[in-house]
Image 1 (tube, rainbow, N blue to C red):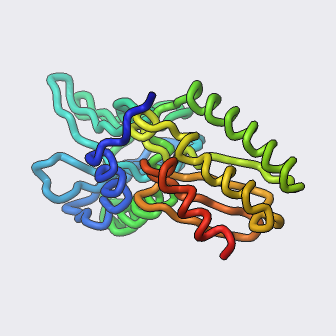
Image 2: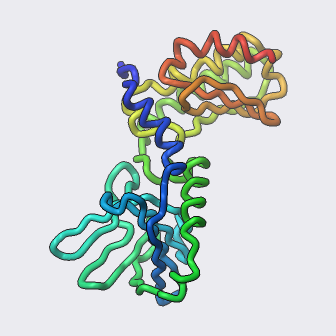
Image 3: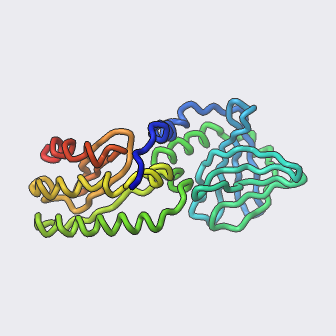
Length: 256
């Protein structure tokens, strides 16, 4: 049985959504590839932490334009700018003997050279803003978290059975989806995600009138319980205590 999510993990989840608000840029550089690619590197305060934001653009990767936080790791052969992808370390930009090479998932690696003219015109604030927006949208979380195919398949099957029962009981034609990017690796490892989301379906089935016009049910993870209606979509924000506290919360809010 999954263990209750530790308070430290909850704090980490909250801090992850607000971290970019406190980021300050020390300097910025722009590198260019031979086929029009650009790599913007923004050094963050404090410089001693060796942390940067890197945005790679002009590639055919699905992740083109993502602004990722990375750490500079020096070694005898040169240096690597390391970020997190699919739950592990990923070298986004590497330097060997003064030569730089960048790569995004799904694209070919390409060499880049420092471009003074582009650097003079570059806006570090734009890269910071892009990073913040992508944090808020969940794009960076989706890039960083590892794949959990077996758990996702198991939880999706349970949700499918439950929503089938809901539709039969209420005469609806709803679908159910997990907002997987909102469930961090720590949450996936520690929490029974379906148990935390299940109250959305069970309480909807007990209150059929509240979901007559709903065609999509969505469950996401957050720091506090929440319920949002948007058009024909009903989104439930669950928490580590969603299985226990969700039913009462939903009974109070579904009929509103």
